[in-house]
Image (cartoon, rainbow, N blue to C red; front, side):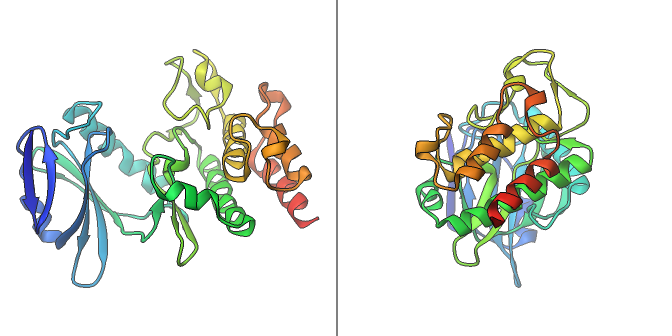
Length: 274
């Protein structure tokens, strides 16, 4: 293991890597070097704004994949971001090959990641109902857009949500495993957090379709508004009408769920307005 320092910010790698290209983007003020994705990420300050840089190719200390696989995955992410551009999605500004790797450059968002592995998660879950409802609406609208663009959401979980507690704005990040339709489960257990995954994402040969993403929206509601994977009304913090809608979204059989995200969201909004 080696320790490198750039602009007074230190980080660890398993092997040497040339980060000279970072200088053209400004001064580093933050680094994220402990992910298992195989990426190392930097917060960079330019003369006028902040950027978020994601780098594949370096041998990161906790990577669960090879540098070559990380490069291939990050490269494939570019077209997904371009196809799914949306106000709720972190904006991809630039992408290019660098010496021995690949770089993507995003807008910097002054928010906290909502994954339960982060300290901000408890603060996020403790937000008032109205703020959580606004966050949920952004998530559903983005995934309605995703399906209309011909994609299926995969590996979405609370770690894909960023929230700015000051501006009360929400952004979606880490959509690199979203996939063009049709999607067939060729793995058995697919990628993702079991808290958010539909039954068919554990079933080899099953089709993953919009009804699977309806399940995802229902599971997200239970994570936000109470109940988690137990999904019982005693832990639910919203109305009983909303509970019934979320419960229908997470039914085991696809045909028993809402058949589209828009159908789910229409029912949800009617119940909110009552």
